Image 1 (cartoon, rainbow, N blue to C red):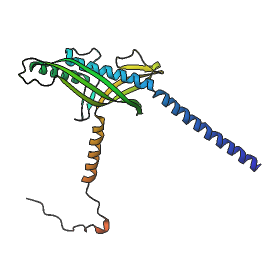
Image 2 (cartoon, one colour):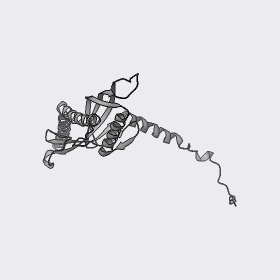
Image 3 (cartoon, rainbow, N blue to C red):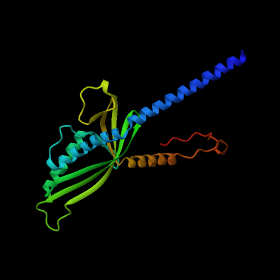
Image 4 (cartoon, rainbow, N blue to C red):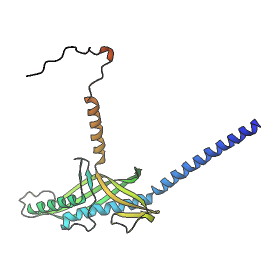
Amino acid sequence: MTRRLGLVLVVSFSAAVLIAAFSSSAQRSSTQHRLSVELKDALAQKALTMLRNESEILVTGTPPGEGLVPRLVGMARLEFSGGDRIAALLKSRRTSLEHGKGYTSIEVTLDAQGIEERDGTVILHGIEHVVEHFTFNRVPPPLPPDVYEESVRHDFIFSVIPVSATGPISPYSVRVNDFEYTLTKDITEPQLLKHYQQEEDGVQKDSRPPAVPLRDAAPFATEQKKKRP
């Protein structure tokens, strides 16, 4: 009887382990299925659309109907709303024209580096490549270069909800495999945020006075300090 009971317990335990392993494997497969190359490309297309809408403001002076998403600037550690970004771009364009410089065209491409899940969101890591072309009026020689190039690292934050729970799709949203992904924030030079955070953590840690062992601590003073007049 004891042997039979022990055998039943061993079989039950083994079955539980197999079920748990299968469930964990299925969950990993589901996650890998969601974080597919297809999804990365779809998210990159939405992020690129937003970046090109941004650049078109400098060329045409017309804000996009879709607006822009909020941006956290890693270098300055400042966050700007979509409306703030549009206002700043229009001001920059106006200032350039006042000084005789106009944007003729801006080429924007995005090199999608990868995607990851974090805190219920999906993050697209990418590098933006920008080539700006200018014309100059009323600018004395020697004329400055008429082409400007730069590359910027981005983390694009996408919210995730089931398609069944959504209404009309928004301009910066895409549906892939029964889920809707919406671009909610753009972080530029995210590696600088991590660097600043590490520096701040180090400063806070170093600024704390070292603890004094009780055996080395000075005895408490028994005399009361005189109050200053």
